[in-house]
Image 1 (cartoon, rainbow over the protein chains, first blue to last red):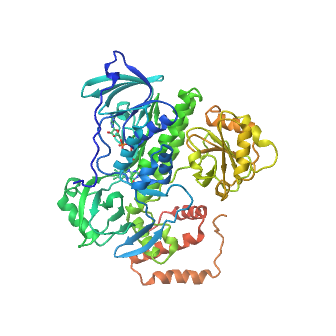
Image 2: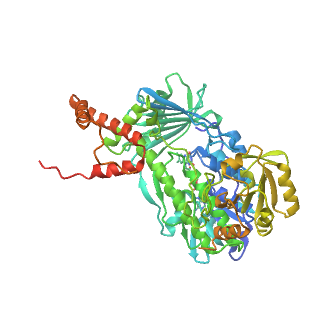
Image 3: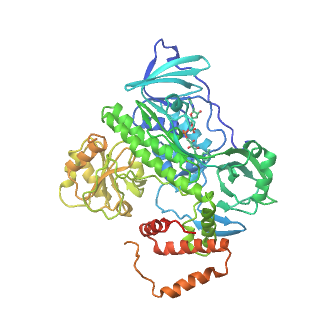
Length: 558
Length: 67
Ligand SMILES: Cc1cc2nc3c(=O)[nH]c(=O)nc-3n(C[C@H](O)[C@H](O)[C@H](O)COP(=O)(O)OP(=O)(O)OC[C@H]3O[C@@H](n4cnc5c(N)ncnc54)[C@H](O)[C@@H]3O)c2cc1C
């Protein structure tokens, strides 16, 4: 069926490890080359840790699956050097329409805050997302990505893990310090270890179809509740790259997935939805039942689960791959710091606690949307329908309509890695939250704040203060990367030169947007983790405050 | 702020009459719809989830009905 995209075929390559007499050891082995496994490999490469990635297949996602990639994911991809192609290829939309029964009840414009490098989200087929990651991985010598190498067995102990890998040339053995498992929702490795992912299956089925429209169709997201062409169910239409449109049709629990998947049954449904005159070609279709579930603990000895294997959500709100990639970046810097001897092993457990919180929030959002779309009982249905009817004339009711909320990163509130505010900040970014982007200038050139953060701990201080505090902060914390921020470019550059420390960068904030978004006052400082999350901030910092917060974020106070 | 459970209506009898009049000629299904709309409108006006939770807690505490 698929015409707009041809899956790349990646060759099986025999690894020297297969010829070694013993089992070769690697610090980090990643199982699974989906969005999460691929992202993890790039994150480790940026931290200077070599990885082996094993995938049992020889291509990227077959059929589209995920299509909505949110800003946070794009920021992470930008850190990996992979966002540009995604944004160029992807589709951004701002206008949405909501229909109930025979009529449109309202339309909305997302109007994202401007002056951010990356859009609020893009619609892009999952296979492109993965293909661009694979291409980016090819540029990194430290990543050994092996297609058609399937992990079949494993043995774990508190020090490390042994695995057996199956290929067409037979099996071989490997060992590693950390095994990162991203083998998908039905993780065999999880099952082999006797672990479970628990939650609920929604008693409903959805037909997911990608079609190519022959004629123009607006770049808007249309969501129907109980439309005349599909009574008592919901329908969603939105655009992806290559003039491909994603259609989600709720089928109900009694639908027969095998029957519904047949083109002769799909066509009339889509024709009724798109209008009798609209010509389209079917690219791909599949019938799904959705689940929301997670593991109680993502870590067993030194085997760590990520992505759908660790936590799975229904697609309403697009939090599967988006949440998965956020888990990956939470984990990668921690494992790297442990391997480099910069952090205690105890830091690892905070991956579990922080991302349990993230997954719980994603599951909550996804469940709420699913419950709105499929009311559980008669009275929920009455509330749902009246909400939709009121939405036509009453703006307040529109905020209750939930056909999936935009995926936003969670805040690691109360994380033991945070240093709580000791001084008043009027807004800004709280400890545990991801930094906000803003335009800046470096050496007179336009740049973005987010691109200066990440991969290592970065401290940023607003130097538009009087006094001699700033030089001390920097010289007494030489193991941090420093950003000196000023409204005045010369001032920042002069101070950076005086400090003559390698990792000191001067940036200017000519529009004052960094100061505004981070609620900076002259002299304020922020400390950012390698995943761009704020772990401490001060109005009047001392060198010791920043040092202590850095140690704390590395897990030395656990 | 907490849910105000002291008498607060400026004309309790008139309100009560209007509420029951609203439903007088309605079938049960339509009454259900009207009630749902009313709850949504009033909830939005109140706006504070804590107050709404307090109201829901009292509302759901049903005494067994004697027939
Ligand atoms: C219809 C649909 C729509 C969706 N829409 C969205 C959306 O809009 N936004 C969003 O963020 N998410 C969405 N999702 C969810 C998203 O697709 C998943 O969350 C995402 O693919 C998870 O990535 P992963 O890397 O954890 O696992 P997967 O993508 O499942 O990858 C697992 C990989 O592991 C490999 N593997 C498995 N076992 C082994 C083994 N033993 N040895 C070696 N390799 C192995 C597999 O071949 C595969 O490549 C959607 C999902 C569906 C089904």
